[in-house]
Length: 312
Image (cartoon, rainbow, N blue to C red; front, side, top):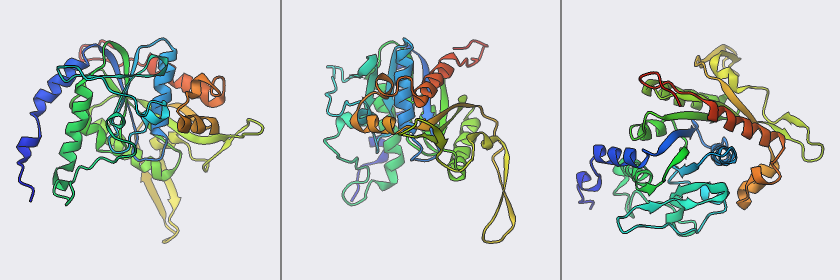
């Protein structure tokens, strides 16, 4: 029987928010990388965006907010690294390549251990959402990030993830949305963007990932999916329903800039699996590498008007 009262499990939300804001007081910018669904390469974009920003001379932190499927440490070759804990219980960010400061649930798990929110008999299932939200904010707010120019947050997939985290973030935060050029992915991105607009959360732009691929033999760029561009998210789509033979409309109707188109590159995938930096090796000068560098430049140049007109 699950006898613990929920109030005994959760710290006061305002206290958590204040701690997170204090911890992020020396962070100039926060970039939340989000997607409507998994499998679109969001973490690879997050990692390489952080690396590209560091290569531009920025002091960069990278927070893996996907607690259930953390993969940032794997992509950076940092799995198994110890986390420094101070006498006050503060967590040190793990030093990463190119000067990155990294935090991930992966550092606290043994091997391929999975997080268990529910308990052996599923008695905590009803509290899963609250426990996960509390753990994410706690990990973010107890990490000593130090002074940073940019903190990149790799958010777990799902339209509900940004609302769960945004209440803890300062007004210097903005989002980058990652998708692949398919109608299924765009439907999920549309839902995520609508939630961001409802929250009045600034969105820098859309990243179209893996729309094309690079030929390993000749280096030519060719379509990977059908010719559906991420820019279609701002249009009304008309298609034929194969079951009814009637026209059906998917009304996305959200205006958003496509700020990068990153082709699939087998070297990028191989480096992510091996824990190597794509932008420090074979990716330097490649089509995908140049696209990632341009993405970092667009993010770096983004100006977000504040409540009194100030910007980044």
